[in-house]
Length: 170
Image (cartoon, rainbow, N blue to C red; front, side):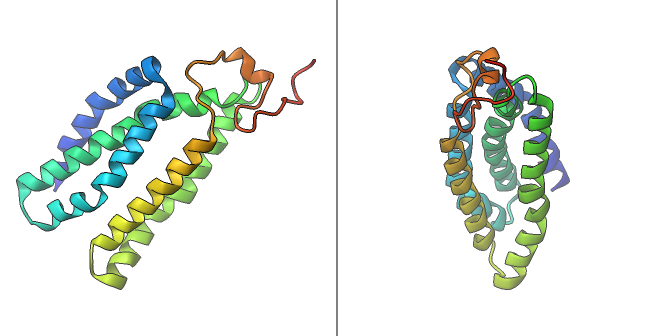
């Protein structure tokens, strides 16, 4: 498994900049949507391949999920930064990224171990991944596309709610 994870990391190292580039060209949201949708579609096949006990299938499972992960991770920093005006960009990005990490990533290990111990079946973790993907898709739907706008305009209006930014002088 160490080799499988290392190969996936090497793949992500190559793919993350590629998906960042694609988000510069086509928009942040379409690339992130594709990554989340791919993760949702791969949730069950990922565990079916791992549960087979086959090393080549484990490489395939991690490789496929790494492509989906990279589509999310490549554009996410830019996407989040562009959601905030220049006056609050660093703080807004930091709070959003750290809060989402605390709510999502920090609890994931404990939740997946609990699900596995409760059910004894990896499909319970696949359901968790699918649920998280649906929540992510819903949240992404509520946010504005940031790629094609002007960063300076983000000081005039809050990109998340679309309301005038009270910190910006008229």
